[in-house]
Length: 194
Image (cartoon, rainbow, N blue to C red; front, side, top):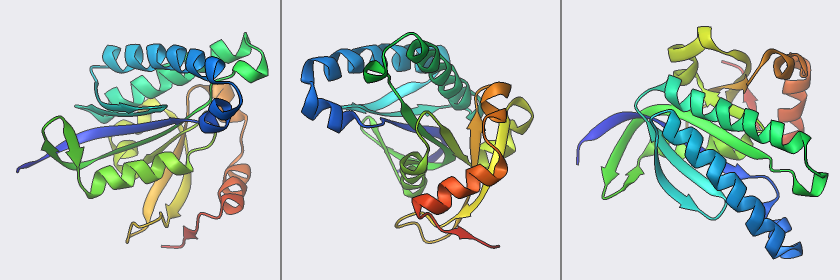
């Protein structure tokens, strides 16, 4: 099985399981809206959905720029949508993006870099996008970003340099570097000095 380099993306709806336990009909309605927005954005950015399990997406792209374009696009759409809805109907998505070596078997991707991407998604803030330094190296001039630092991710041996992506200037200005670091300190994710 030969490895290949791919930009990969994981997403997850914040609080979906809790919503499902309270109001299944609403949860399924919101999931349908979510799926339409994400599928459209991923397809528009030349991406391929590897898996869609419940409220989570796993997708691949040829380039870091395409993965980032899809993420920024669907986060902006979800944010605009949320502004028009009652709070109970908000859809907040966490996104992690990484570029690295993957192994393909059937219609699935495997490997250490897939695990890194999944861990990035798990530490993304509500409505936020976090990426590895590999993504930043490819697209740094195209985006608003802040470095979080080198983070020790669960079950990943080496610290990963992680950045928060902001989908526009207002979003970027809504959080200072200090607030970003405080968020991760409160989350209990160790920032490693390198």
